[in-house]
Picture 1 (cartoon, rainbow, N blue to C red):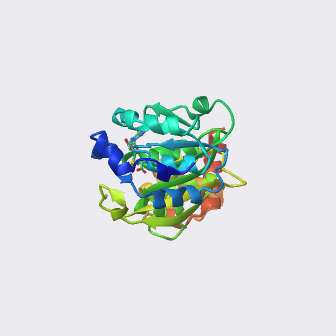
Picture 2 (picture 1 turned 180 degrees about the vertical axis):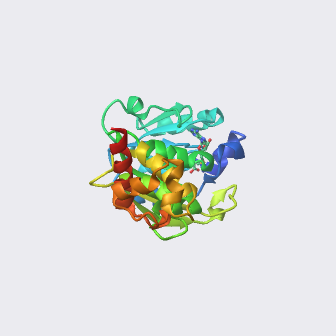
Picture 3 (picture 1 turned 135 degrees about the vertical axis):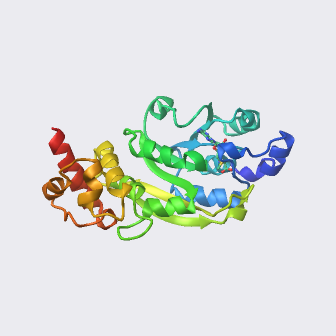
Length: 276
Ligand code: SAM
């Protein structure tokens, strides 16, 4: 299967009279070299199930199909459905398009069985909520290869002590090994967004932290006032924040940005122990 035999994406957009809708975070990758690189970054996709959010004109979808993946692509914008129809035919049963909002999609039900990699050039406006949804997902969810705005990508992979380190890093790294693979300049997109983007891979870690909701709560409090000492910042969680920090074995004078993954796990465990 070679996507070079298909009409160009630019021609397809023109034929269907389609243009990008900013409200839906539409910035398209029309260069197959880039979409092929993204597919390659996801590893061997031969015969594997893939969930893609927002196929749009189908540039990344083409590369995924070419790599041998079985793709379920969820698109919110109905205007793209007629353009994607020939791709479904070309895929010979490897592509299914679902019209809907990915935030509300029940991926496990769509898949019916097995696991799926999640590979997407995400719409910027819903990239973070989608990531959090997938971090919490059940056993259907495999490794993720996702395009975000560069600044969001940096927040996902950030380490303690850096300005980018915050809730998103703690939540993402509680479940996954996160790696920023490469950046893509704004000019590679049609239309170009204001800033660059980056591809992040998120692979399940051997010891995922199970209580992500608790972690969301404690990190919201801790990073809500990130410049303050934790004994003050955590007062929005509990009036005896200092005691909670002692229970977690953490220094009450430490600041959120100094606490590593292990520290936040201890804090979330201490908070859970109180509720038990
Ligand atoms: N994959 C295409 C590419 O790389 O050229 C398009 C990527 S574009 C950044 C984001 C796509 O996500 C658009 O097609 C947009 O319509 C779609 N989209 C936006 N919000 C969505 C949502 N909540 N659920 C599903 N698709 C959505």
